[in-house]
Amino acid sequence: MANPKIKSSAQTVKKSNATAGRKPAVKNLYPRADLEEIFRRFSIQRPEPKGELEHVNPFTLVVAVALSAQATDAGVNKATRALFAVADTPQKMLDLGEERIREYIKTIGLYRNKAKNVVALSQKLITDFGGEVPRTREELVTLPGVGRKTANVVLSMAFGQATMAVDTHIFRIANRLLLAPGKTPDEVEQRLMKIIPDEYLYHAHHWLILHGRYCCKARKPECERCVIADLCRSPEKTWDIPAPLVELPAQIIGAEATS
Ligand code: SF4
Image (cartoon, rainbow, N blue to C red):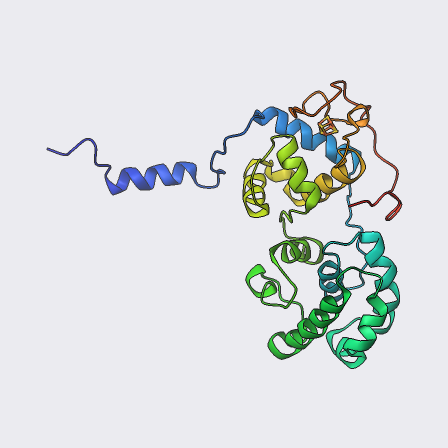
């Protein structure tokens, strides 16, 4: 007689087929309908959200993101405008040389180390990738100065892949709102990828960054200006009437960048 506790392989296959394509459940305070509504509102506020780091091609995006660690986007843009005007390919960057790169980026924190990385990553792109920016996370993180977060930004902004690059704003919001609480950026990334409705995933990373930068700010969230104040379950929230849902005017780059 078959042991009822032992599932046949046919049963297992049937079950995995039934759940195929569905995201595994994650413990989360927000019902599905609320998650849909939160991201629907973000999508109305910012239909075409954009990153604020200036770049002219995938290579300059990699460099800009690598330079942005512990610096504001506005500060990086100020330095890279002149740098990218003279060096927008790995070869041109190598020709420029570490010392001159340092001169261009000396207003950015940790610039000595970052200049070294820019040279090393340009060299590696030429040696290992024919001068092109690779399109997989595994390859991107082999570049000096490029971690998982940078790789995710590049995959999303340069190659249109849905990723979740967890920066300081996203990490704070995920934990403050108890949306996808986690102790590390990787944990938060995995949870957000599971709970965000698929149709909103591509833009979600920018929506969360911009919401964190301009509304749910680090020191004091501006709940009276928040379009999800009624849905937010943060113990820190001070207001629960949602702000009017209107499309925001195009943001001025770096105007309030305080990251
Ligand atoms: S209600 Fe306040 S705490 Fe909640 S998301 Fe909005 S700004 Fe942040």
